[in-house]
Image 1 (tube, rainbow, N blue to C red):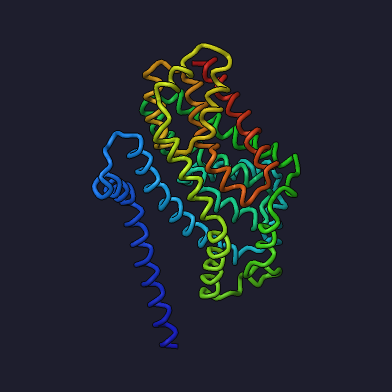
Image 2 (cartoon, rainbow, N blue to C red; image 1 turned 180 degrees about the vertical axis):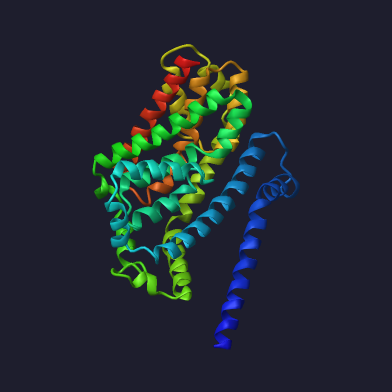
Length: 348
């Protein structure tokens, strides 16, 4: 008994030290990326190449670190909830309520579109309806407290409130619509195979009887199976995003989005979708574009497209979803963003 207690204490201490080291590294990624880009590599600040390299050296470890932590955590949590138990928990609620709850959950999670994918995978493999998981996948990057605070500080409560309301509406309605289309057959088979064979998910109440050692092993297994499959595509997606981030000129986009024409909003969405960024990073760009004369609704549609839909996200999602479902997902969400852009331009 004493030896077992000692092992538990050692594992807890190791976990605390490991999490502290993870958090310390995560908090300093921006400084490390800048140091590697400009001090070690000798690149000049303000250059296209320097911006692209710094972006990649910051985003790549950030996304991979989040990927490891989230997938491990989801793997542990999944040992408590078998697919059957999850379905029973959701059985008493309408799916539309699930879309609302998933969208609200997304607003308080600090994930960009790529970082939200691991949790999306965890939801699918836990048996949560596909439409509900897609509401989370849309809401997590598109609507968050950082963007809300920044918008409030720059533009006031009216713009911030409209952003929050319309962003949630896009996530809820898009997820609900996609759920009605019954596209589960367009999820890659390995996702559901992973669900069927995951530790603690064989049925009944076996998950609740596992030891913490077994749960930790389930987390490690999830990391090995999921991260081991998708990490090359994560790096490829971020590399594409870094190139666009470093080399796409702001003046060009401002001139396009500043035109008073019906096609400015869809064009802004088309320009934004291939890009990659998070809300905190793109809002200063939004402010700069507005300062150059771009229309508010057009710029916010561009912002939502950048943080809610991105080419890197599509590349990562391809390991989970088939092309038809990815195209449908992007089409439905882009349609919602278009409505938001036109609404802002009409009201403000």
